Length: 247
Image (cartoon, rainbow, N blue to C red; front, side, top):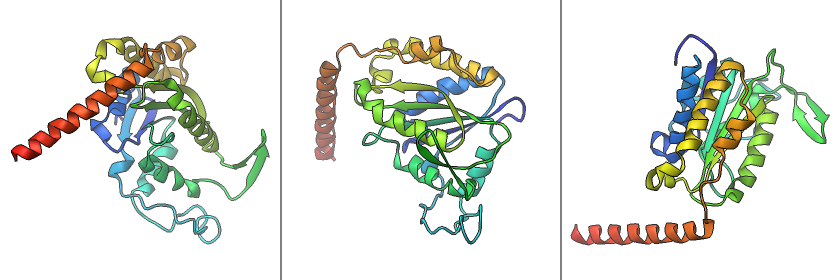
């Protein structure tokens, strides 16, 4: 991560880390952000030592602001607190984020104050910060229909708001294997993501035009795409079976 410019922390919750399709979109955004003079660091919760929250309450009552566990979350929290911009990314797993990212988010409890506020029909922890962080969300899915992202979008929106940050943009990529099988269909969308990263680094915002372009539909027939996915999986299974027989 560069020591100059705006500090942006990228958290990719994919279990496959750099090898996943989510990383392709993340790197497109990072490329733009770095062109916009942001210093970017990418973290992969799946590769970190993060104990699950025990819901013991120690960070609330006995040792306010300090977790009972001292693992990689200590450094992660410090980096999150220092960042001006956040990028949260995850593939869709059972209509929500990955367990690796969820586990990390649950361990953010010590960063919140002990008091609560009720506003806009919901209860929030009070969190003091001189300058509100700006955040962007990226998600990918094997399913070809955009309806797949309805649930995870709602979760991310609430998580970001609970963190006291402002969500300024979301990018969703269905049929993520198209990045390999039909890259020409996603070229314009990924280019928009890169330009969005540059805008985000410059002033913490993303234009409506880039958000629309980045989320432009590229799966013409989701039902037909599902049939193709099923055939691909069956072919992969058969190939694996034959390889095992040869061994």
